[in-house]
Image (tube, rainbow, N blue to C red; front, top):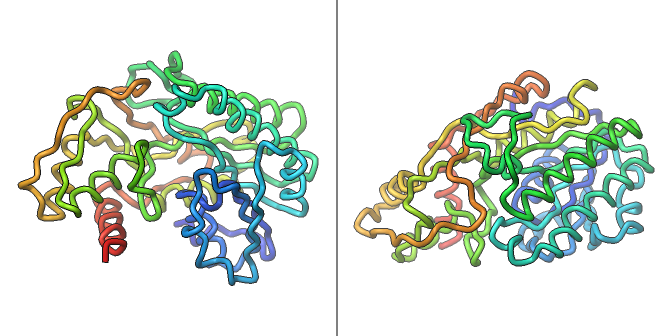
Length: 326
């Protein structure tokens, strides 16, 4: 069962925070396609108006230009909402090292505001974005929930704290919460530009312009790259997960492992740009060397069965970026 078949009640209302971002806008689109009422909360600090432009004329879509740092706005946004899909946050490990106070304010205080607003408005399920960065320096592969190491960045710390607060809101107040530890999500609408752009869109966009990308480190570091449609499935199935899943966090990935250097050569081959050789730069501060997820817990408690492997997702992503260049 893919994300299109998750059996929500007719007339359900969803709030997607960070709904103008990469993951958020894909969630919004998928829910609108199924005929649900969708509210998008975004202050456009990192989200893009282009991502939600196609939805503005849809009568089922409501745009709330709110900020999760404002509790009153969070309260308004949650009125009459069945499910909250909380994606709003500032990402990027290196940027968090430069701006720790800001990350505290947005990612921790903002998430706490959303939890409180969801509790007071008696939301059915609060599903939120966590991150594989919470595993820190724990070297064991695959990464398994409950076996975490020392955190390596303020970003990772904010996601860890989010998980702790969500677990408390389930235990103390009975708010059903589920955390999704995303592993290197990629796909349509992921921004290829900027200093903190993710590696796949950056490689593709530069190669399409006949420019050589830079690989940080020796290229031997590996990641569990996860196509966007797998993440949509996880969010929707989390909404309807059994009570025993509440208060917990789950790895959301495909369960594979790809080296950055190998990814570069796959992309270059698919684009016919094998003659362009990459540059190599220093390791990124706060990055972990290897990442690979055990998704057994998500399979068991959420019914998560990712349909998109890395190769299929990569071909779809390349097709999307090629379309942008036309």
